[in-house]
Amino acid sequence: MEEVIALRNVEKHYHMGDTVVKAVDGVDISIEKGDFVAIMGPSGSGKSTTMNLVGSLDLATKGEIFLDGVDIEHLGESELAQIRGKQIGFIFQGFNLIANLTAKENVMLPMLFQGKDRDEREHQAEKLLKLVDLGDRMDHYPAQLSGGQQQRVAIARALSNNPEVVLADEPTGNLDTKTGAMVMDFLEKLHSQGTTIIMVTHDPEKALKHARTIYWIKDGKVEKVTKRIKNIWKTVRGS
Image 1 (spheres, rainbow, N blue to C red):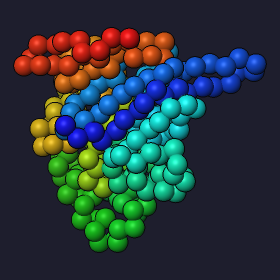
Image 2 (image 1 turned 135 degrees about the horizontal axis):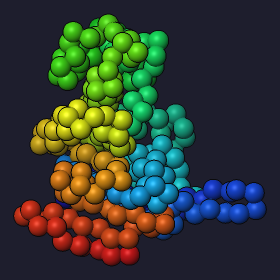
Image 3 (image 1 turned 30 degrees about the vertical axis):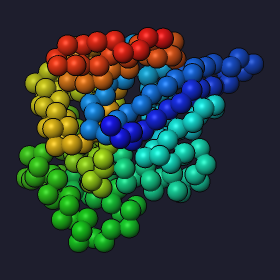
């Protein structure tokens, strides 16, 4: 299988006074094209820092990070933003919508940074909002939308540049059970159409139900990796 994201012996250190905290400590992760991956771990395990590294939102203190075979450690910030913007769509737990932009304008925004003209941005935003059943809410502002509707706007925004990878950070964390199930069903649908899904979660039930590969993170390390093989989970790598 083709590898789209790889972390090789990656460490991320933070300085707190005279203390060095290793939030990520020698992690190896390989994301294959078309997989549904869960990065799983409790609060404080290092999974959020791992997510930032996997999503190219942060650079490693040590080690190598590759995005479609490109070593991002050697890219400038503008180059990194361009390649990340084209290849990865982000869905955040807190939605991260811009309050003074309408639903349509929020979805259009990532396309602006990729240099697409206004007509193309509008057409794509309208198509995606209809796809997530928000065709009648395009001109509403985030404060006028429910939590579930805001998350669907965030999903549409994540898809605006047709990314090959969608990274979802606790995508149902702020939603009720019914709406959360709808969001997960939509991610499953995207996966069935060939999109690579990476989901960061603390919920083993969601990971086991939806993912095909799970990286179990503990104390900044990959404790084990499990894969679903013919609907049976098998450990393929331990710490």
